[in-house]
Length: 394
Image: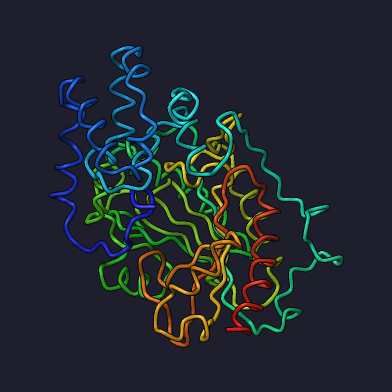
């Protein structure tokens, strides 16, 4: 999925990639930009941006719209090996450039071009839900596992991360800190905020930051990731970046990564309902804070920077040991088994990271769009059930 899912191994300075992001292709003559995209289409057929780019549609746009669309496509133009190759830059881009994005969305999510999305967290009546409504992994014969559910969210009154200025990033963080003050005052959350912005009241030093990264609580420096850098998403690092962590470390909000916010709940246990329900409750608390409104599309649901996350913006996962399916030291067999089950396999440190000791893999449903939140968490439960059967047979 190169182009929307960074390697997570970024540790270098932001200077060089950010400078690259600020230059071409937006400064190229229009005919040269189109020519470059068509060449990428021929050389890299997996680049969805290039595959779905329609020169006739582009040429029919006004000058400002042409510039805006090319900005959305910049990551895929500068990184021909991108799997997606485009990011939205403004909350309205999916609707504004629907003739382009509808094709990209259909191509990635395997839906019709006129497909729309409905958000629904209610488990009632979801196909495959156990009769008692409990998504209990213990009932599948599994021990307590690391469970995590996260959603991406963007605030409606700011540009998306790829188009934000340094001031935008700092002001968004400042606005979110008002919300964090309210969470800190609530006994069920408490905790505190950790900012990477120099001179911020809650600033943490590099040693503290690296410890949070090591603990899988904070995201890594994005600056060396070429996809995020050329999209403008990694610009101005570390300004406007940080994370809120609840007292029990089970509820976390990232600020300033690929989306304005990544809101997540995690717990070691067997009841998937617990992390799912806690996230929904916390999400409602944040969304109901005065002055905070999440960016939504009438047709596409939750607005995210990358089209891969559009719709729910949700990823539900567990870390599960698959020693038989990973007996060769790789996750190749696990991926082969998981693909027809609609599941994605990652290393325990995220995408492009190795599997853990004992063959521990991160397993999640692949679907984000044209599926409800309730269906995703149920799909995770049933996917794990089927995967366990395959693991026991291997």
